[in-house]
Image (tube, rainbow, N blue to C red):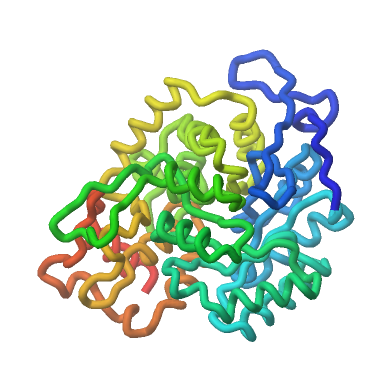
Amino acid sequence: MSISSSRRGFLGAGLSLAAAGAAPVEVPLTYRLLGKTGLKVTPLSFGCMTTSDASVIERAADVGIVHFDTARAYQGGNNERMVGAALKGRRGKVIISSKSQGKTAQAALADLETSLKELGTDYLDIWYLHSKSDPAEVTDELLEAQRAAKKAGKIRLAGVSTHFNMDRMLKHLVERGQTDVVLTTYNFAMRSVAADKNTDTSAPRTDMTTAIQAARKSGLGIVAMKTMAGGTVRVARGDRLYGAEPRALAQELGKPGVPLAALKWALKNEAVDTAIVCMTDHDQLQENLRAMAEPFTHRDEVVLSGQLARMEGVYCRMCGACKGVCEKGVPVPDVLRILTYAEGYGQFAMARERYLELPEAVRTIRCGDCAECSVACANRVRVRERVGRAQEMLA
């Protein structure tokens, strides 16, 4: 596949973007190399997880967005079908990635075959082993499945996605040397984690900017996700929420200007090759396109500093410092990530589906039964309150 590196204008030839109150300005597309793969990608990519309107995907492809990301599990498998239909006729001009949560080679390869069928293609550009949070989860069996799929021409690049323990996972994948692309959580809320008496200090922690730069230097392609810090910054848009009062939640978690500033923050790290961002409508697409054209400014820093203060006690950074599991066996970061699908993205059905995938023994636990929480968060997240919220809403 040949991907042109010519600089095309946003929104088609002769069309331009304008910031609020400003005159239209022509904005060129730029490209970054995806690790050592040789592929070129626009810094903004399209995360299709929450998209139900195919016309938004079509429009993104029209204006020059190159990379579109989906997964076997999104929207009960329907997301792949919609993405395939939206990109029909453009296959040689776009990069399509999908993911499998299969724990065995047989399960993963079966997912791959289904993904190819639903997407209407005979190959994936990137195929991720999905949601791996511990090196032990990236088994030799699964890596061999990726090698076999690549040899058969069904995938071009082998990837791993990770939501938790991201810095350790990046280091491990570099050392293994079997992975072409990593999809990792990365956003403005991530800083070095302070040690706490109940925090796991068996290994030194690092901030994610440093970890990503080191992994990219080794040749790994870096795709960032969760750049909006859990999706809560979209609440002010009026997306439908379930189990929460939208106006109150918007006041706590969402302020004007935060989405754009958050994306610009992630993209200012040149070690990030591209960021997949969920977009549900044309307004979100247009705003996010601006992030590739506008520099990160002091005003953006002020906006994000205010957002961090509002998020304190609410947003889990998935840093791994708390070990991630309470003494009763609840996987705290997983539960809090699932909660953001409902509260932040307005995707209650997805959140409910992900919650029900947790082991039954975990789903029956109630935080209200404990006198105090055994998990101490270095970032002061109110763990018991937030996990209890997820249990009340989703269990």
